[in-house]
Length: 119
Image (tube, rainbow, N blue to C red; front, side, top):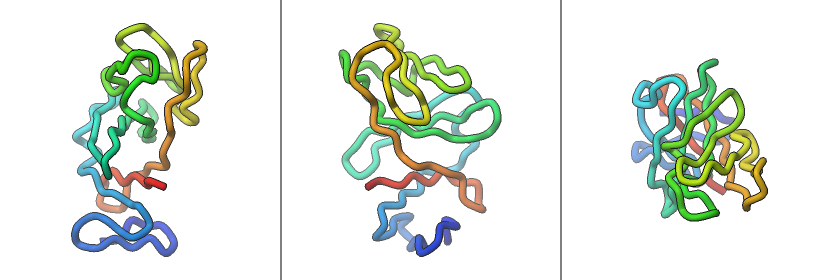
């Protein structure tokens, strides 16, 4: 299996030395929603936008620990369901004054699996 990144070949476990993690089929994330995954000891929220693109950010709101994957999204922002803090999906930056989320590179490989890159 290959993730399609230069030098980023994946082994049979879905992991590579470069921090690539295969999370499963893209279809498991409904369009316009997010799903949380435990990856390498971190909680990551992956969103499937209406244009089909993917975004990945840390899954826990830095304000009060809200479940970011359950948040409401528009084209570029996710809103925490607990206290409505908003974060840019591309960068993780807060638009409402709380701390940022961490953002992660994410893409769909040629088999339409979600692949996220952890540092």
